[in-house]
Amino acid sequence: MTNTRATDPEVLEARLPLRVRRFELREGSGGAGAKRGGDGLVRELELVEPATVALLAAWRPEGATGVSGGENGAFGLAVITESGVERAWSGAPQRLGAGDRVRVETPGGGG
Image (cartoon, rainbow, N blue to C red; front, side, top):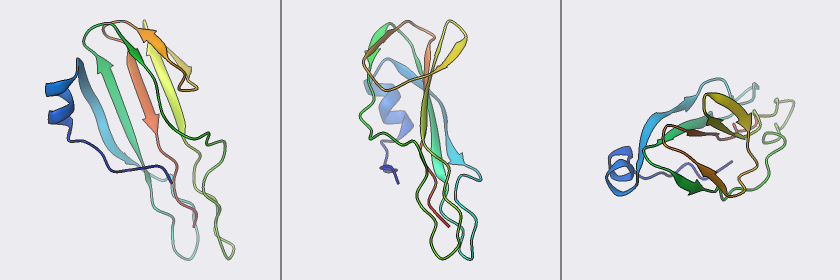
């Protein structure tokens, strides 16, 4: 699971040139099983002015492993929307313009 502790959106917006567009549970990302895995989060940030962005996260090509027959959780991903075009993002430093967005979907837990 990814670090799900987060700064309040109001604090982020007051300190950085961005708007929090989404901050919600990633419904259904936890694996099925006798005890369903916990859902991850979706965070989407929109830049108010040009900036360089980077993501410090481990590679997450698959979700957390389920146990005792439970299913794996959904894998994590990061996406950049630049000039209205969405593309997968590795998290490497990237220069973006005002109005561009970054979305991070954290993995779900295994069931």
